[in-house]
Image 1 (cartoon, rainbow, N blue to C red):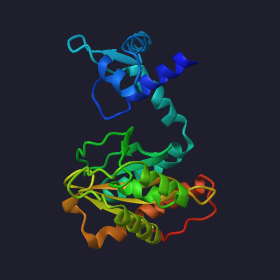
Image 2 (cartoon, rainbow, N blue to C red):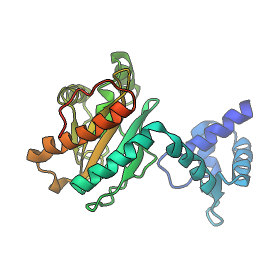
Image 3 (cartoon, rainbow, N blue to C red):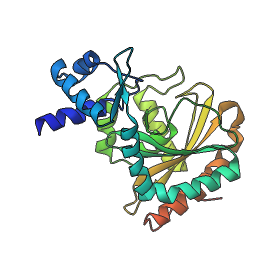
Image 4 (tube, rainbow, N blue to C red):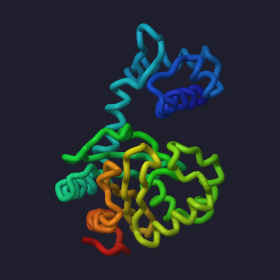
Length: 255
């Protein structure tokens, strides 16, 4: 079981935002002997879960790892119920929609639907988002028990992603509280310069946030006067998803 745990740790390390990793880097990152890392990588390579670049000798995620991960999206009830709603919102707004979820103490951008106004933000499905700098992260934080919120905020410094990222804990707490009260969060330039997002909660049967539904805009195209209208459209979609996921009600006004 110890060797299996090491193999899982090596494979999970590739979820970090790095294009490729070498044996030495993984050994230092995971505090595992280089010989053990090499053996694990050889096994993962044999099964197509990682691929080695012939020139740099570094490793990247293999196509079978992608195929394995896509099985989750194919059978996840939240994804299944969200996709048709996301397509409808994209048709209404012409902007791209995202679904993000909590993954332990992280927030994961799970799936997206591109709209006619699509532009490359640099974020891809399957990538972790910063709790403090993303609208989806702050929406999800607002529905955590106080003890979990305190633990997450105390676990690591609030690192700036851009010069506009919220990095003061008390400011973040106020933003989280205000966003929960009005039912949506807006971020501008906090994760990527020139990008704005609006996110609303998807409510589960227990009244918690089981996901965050968001729209992505070029920052210059999102007027502050239009924020509430876009949020209302998102609330309409999130209400539908919430009810289909077993929630008895949805607490915010919909378009």
